[in-house]
Image (cartoon, rainbow, N blue to C red; front, side, top):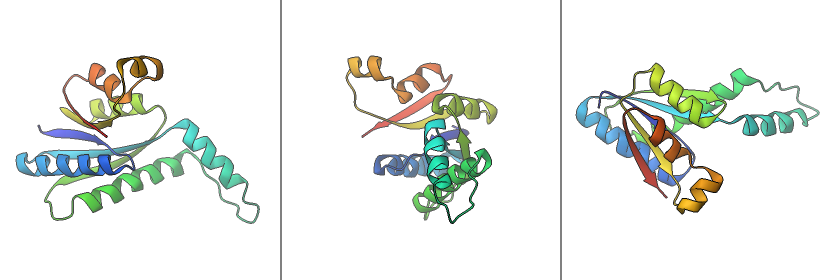
Length: 148
C-alpha cells in the first residue's frame, strides 16, 4: 500500500476505520487521502435551510459545500490520527458518492480504499444499493470494508 483513500462519515465505526487505516499507513509509510462527499440532496437541503434564515444573508454554494466536507474530513483526521505519524490530505467533494470516491481514487493513483459498509441482506443490497459493494466491484485495487 502506497496511497490509500479513506471514506469519512460521521459514525463511530468510520472513525475506528480511519484510525485503523492511519495505523496501517504509518507502518508502511503510505499516504492517505480522507474524503467526505456531500450529496446533492444534502447540499440542497442545507442550502434551503440557510436561505430560510431572514436576518442572515448567507450564500451556500458548491464551493462552500466542498470546503465544509473537506473540513469535516480534516477534523476526523486530526482526532483519529492523534499520536500517529501519518501523511494525509483531506478532500471534500460534492455529488454522487460512488462517482466522487472512484474519481478521486483514480486521480490520486490510490491502490487501496477503506470504506464503511452496512450489514444488509443480499435482497436489501439489491433493492437499496450498497455503496461499499459498488466501490468494491468497480475499484481496481484492494478494498477494506468495515461493517457496523
